[in-house]
Image: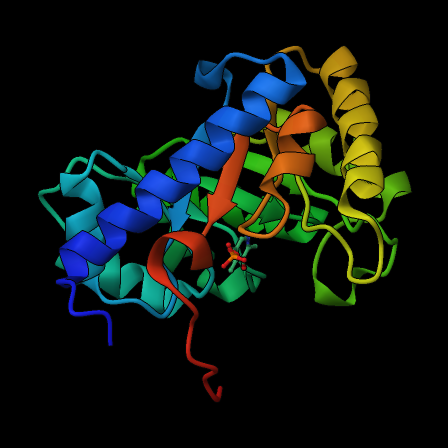
Length: 234
Ligand SMILES: *Cc1c(COP(=O)(O)O)cnc(C)c1O
């Protein structure tokens, strides 16, 4: 063990991530303020979310509805913005709509319908991103590239939802820079039809530099901030 307190450990993770982000922004000729950092807190306890909030990280993300809802409740009172980044079943839309402000993983019209109804029920506005399956194999979530315009249009038209932009995970076995370049082109096409869709959610602990080089506006960082997650059994 490191002998550091958990707070010191997370502060050190944040410092290292900030350094990488600043360096990548310099290399890409971008301003640090163009790139937002979202802490992915899945599998980590609410106490870690409190530590992050104390360090000024107020954007946090989860990928499982039940875990997200529980943690958001435990952290009620903190000025957090919750993001949802996991595959979402329509019957969990309300659970997520009750606390999350940004849903990164909208990939099909039926989910748009469910989220719109959930937003109305909760009397909240949800910012929705179209998740793109950059390898066009949507088994792990994401819309095929060809289906992105239709999902974007459905979000833009839906009551209670606002189209925020696009999100993707770099496919395994492909150079992330090439994948994120495709996402950037898709994002620009979406933005041409929907000027409000300015978000490009891309970049995780292992590929944040490639994401920043390709226009990412929001990074989703777990491991580099909080440490390696224990594998868990569903
Ligand atoms: C877990 C997760 C992340 C964070 O990944 P790290 O490699 O731990 O930084 C980002 N995006 C999504 C969709 C995730 O599920």
